[in-house]
Structure formats: C-alpha cells, structure tokens
Length: 419
Image (cartoon, rainbow, N blue to C red; front, side, top):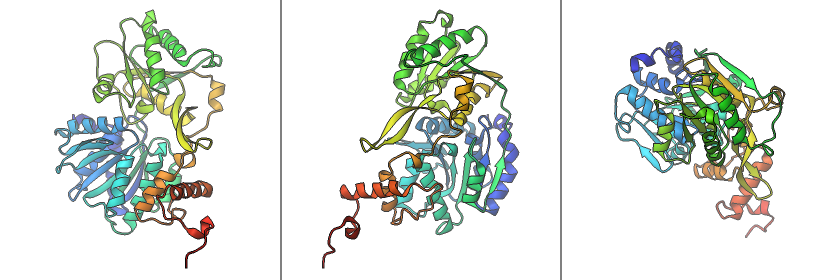
C-alpha cells in the first residue's frame, strides 16, 4: 500500500516541502483533488524526522473526513487505528500515547490552544482544505502563527488548499514558500441543463433522479449525487428507487448525521453499481473508488447569522463556482468522468467565484469567548486573516456581556464608574 502511495502526484513536492519547512517553518501547498496531499504529507513529515519530538495534528473541516483519512493512513502505515495514527472529533476519540499522526476537526485544536498555549507534544500543524474558510480554521491558523512567533519557533505549519488564492496566504504567512502540484486527474465532461429548473415547482430530488436514470445507460461507473441535506437525500433515495433504468443499483446515503457504520458502507467497494447520495461531506478530502459520474444539485446548507432571530442558522444556498469545480473533480479521481449540473451554463456564470468566509457571515460570540478565554483581550487587534466587521465584533462582545460571560466595561455601557 505505501509503495503504491508514493506514486501519487504530491510526491513531486516532497524534497521542496522538507527544505521549506526546515528553512522557514511554514509552507502553503496548492494541490488538486486526488493528488494525495491529505494522506501523504503527514507521512512525509513522519518519514523525514519532523515527528521525533511530537505529533502532527491534521485539521479537517469535517468529522467524516477526519475519521476516514485516519483509517486510510493507519492502513498505509501498517498500524491499528488509534495507535501511531488516530483521530479526535467531537464526542469521539481514537488516540493513544503512541499517536504521531492525529486527524482532528478544527474546534478540537482551538480548544487545545486555549488551555496550552505552547502546544506541548505538537511538532507540526497541517491545515487541510483551507479554502473552505471555516471560522475555527481561520482562528486556529492565526493562533498557530502567534504561538510560532513567541513560545514555539520550532513549530512547523503547513496550509493546504486546492482552490484558495495562494497570494493572500503568501502575504499573511510571510515569510513562506508556495508549492504547487499539478496533479494527475482524469478529464471530466461537464454538462448543464438545457433550460433553468425551479426546484419549487419540480423538487430537486426528482430532477436528480431523472438525470441519474438518463446517464446510467450512457456512462459506466458509480454515481455521486450532491444534495444539500439529510431530508433531500432521503427523498432522492426514494425517487431513485422508482427509476426502472436504475434497477440493480445500490443506493446509499452519506451525510454527517449517519452512524459511522453507514458512512463506511457508502464509501466501501460493492459488487453492484452504486449511487451515493451525499451532502458536501464528500466534496473534498475523500477519494471514493469507482465514482465516475457526479450529479450536482448545486446547493448546500450553510451557516449564516440571522439578524431577525439573533442566532446562526442553516440555510440552503447556491454553491460557488469553486465548490462546483471541487464536486466535478470527484468524477475524475480514478478514471475519465462526467458531471451533470442541475442548472444552466448561464446560471453558472452568475454564481459567486468563491464561498464567503464564515468570518463574514456568522455570529462571532462563540469564537470571541474562546479568544478571551485564551487570554486575548483585544479581539479587534487579533491577526485575522480576513478581519470581521467592527459591528460584528461589537455585537458579539455586547451579547457576551449581557449574558454575564464577559466583564462589563462600565464606560461603554453608560453606567457610572463606582468610586
């Protein structure tokens, strides 16, 4: 397994990566889906002695990816999951004193930083799929730079992305080197609907099932169908079962609310042709063998601040062109593929180029409280990669003060200063 892994495109950067980390301690890796960066770069650090004094913590935006990548790397290293390779996600942990490669979700690392500002036992941090710009990922990277600049100059930092503008990171992380792997993905033919469809009049699950049936007799291989959430996935599974052209196919849901056994079933090899109906958990990181057809609804549930209710809430939104490209790339991981987008080419041109970072669309109260608990009083002066609006920070601090989570600054609140 390990010998085959060395044939992955990411190994063309191995010597440059090692040299850059030894010289500067931080590096940005640009590599497309399928290059092997998520599984192989932690192993490169291990092979070149970077983990002799500690572990590498690999941050993943999603729990599913953290768990499955840990399992894949453990197989390649040749150890039991939880031994030299493990993972740690909310309410679940498979690690031990022997762990040297630990896959975690972003909140896990930020909490560790809050009670251990030296990150004892951590030799390197790898920020995977950073283009997704999750709030905790942004904050964790900023804290990592602070720690590296003060108490841990030996800490190594790797930021990895497939689509993010690397120049933004070059400036933010300077001095650092940007390494680019071209990858070896197979060509994917992109198709659009000939005319726009209103999902209010024709449910998205019916459109998705119809397109799967149309393509099934034209292209070989398994399907990966992207829907925004568990409800839509359930309805799509039902609609697919009603398509006679898909008789004999195994239809499997894949989303974060499923138990691990069901998630494993969705990505495992099967003798029958398979249709995986998934949320964006399958958009990045994971290679699902056998998938050559992607049917993309172009929607995702995204967390946004609702000013009317004063809370973060999940809303179904159109994905960006960058996310659509990521999804299409899933069809070309192991063979030439085909991607059917359930919108028109004209509609595609009108979509946003990139997703809006969470720091620009979420309530910041929770992360402000986390920063304050870490001893950072001046959150406005915190080294944000992309600074939030001043009003958003002020609203967060005011809410925390009203809840009694922060001490009230009496001058600002208009109360008289006690004698």
